[in-house]
Length: 477
Ligand code: UDP
Image (cartoon, rainbow, N blue to C red; front, side):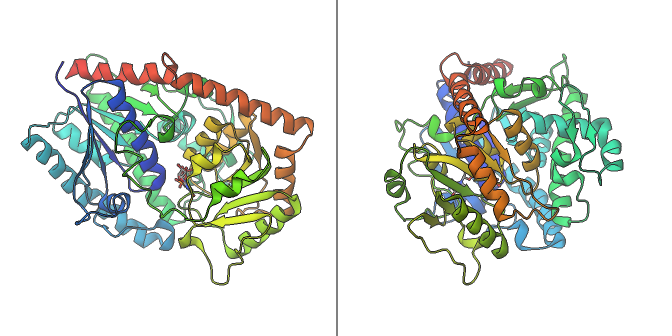
């Protein structure tokens, strides 16, 4: 068999880079001799490798290389720091400059006799699929949200848009899509109901275009081969959703959590690649070490969402009323002047932490999260119950899954997504308390953790699906 070279191309956000890194690591482990090139935009690459002489310098680490493309914003773009016009301008450059520089990466690799045998384009990277198609390269979508979300978008864009639009102002109205439980409008992505915020409209446009690529591939497929999608989920978690779109060949290969796979035998991933945010030097793990099992609440809203000053103060009141210890991530870019973020005897506030290490710590008993998909899946993988406070995009749907799996509570928030202190306290008490509900939530969390571990063990479903995907493409090459 010819040596396989997977080119994984990814959007420059932390929530996209993390699962791409985990996938890269697993692809090289599952197939001896395989090489993976991970291509993120320069804005992310330079933060992952801060010591490079030039921000776009290539990095080679054994079987994994890192070669960036440019999206025209090499110093970065923050969606929520600007308005709809900024987002539109970014999307235009992302596609135009991205396509050009990504093509150059492919040319460079071919010229050095390392031709790419399969392009794995992560969600939003629709133009990379176009480039792959133009060059006749095999390709697969890497969907880094749940299969439920993939199915919901697919059906929305294939016949259900009208009914959703007609009822967009009725949060309780339910829509029944094939093989999915009835979904209330409030459980669907915020893109379906907020049509006025240009930042959301731009983001959704890149998702729509991702699905158009799948349709194009389905239309030109010969021999009945369906478009291939790797999904960052676990079969047992989403059986219905995985069966909901028979038009696609879905491979559930999650959870894409790097530290579950990296065993430190290679020098690189994990050792040389950093996050897009600087880790806080405060000794938060040592602080957790001093706490009793399951006694600490961990609070984080991921890499993009930010709580307003008023919301932070309200949450602080709610956490204080719960009487629990808490570790809270407030990113540097989301701090306000005069934030009252001093540590005290019950709390520690950090700018950025190693989240999976925190969730794996025995002292952590509850995760207050915005329900980004990585955070949600990491909680499942670590067996930590969740209080979901969804903010935008797929997060309402993910919070609904948390309830379906019985692993947490979904906080009631108002139309502006404001969470009141007493509601926060109620949810924390429910998840961590000794009531019937709390005990049931903790026992479901432990049961799902075991199922997820089973999926990634030798012979488990995710391992099996990844190998099947990989050898299928190798045989085609
Ligand atoms: N994360 C982290 N440290 C932090 C906060 C977040 O390592 O202090 C990681 C977290 O483990 C997850 C990612 O950042 O893998 C956030 O992705 P998610 O999909 O949850 O949310 P997003 O940032 O995309 O909104």
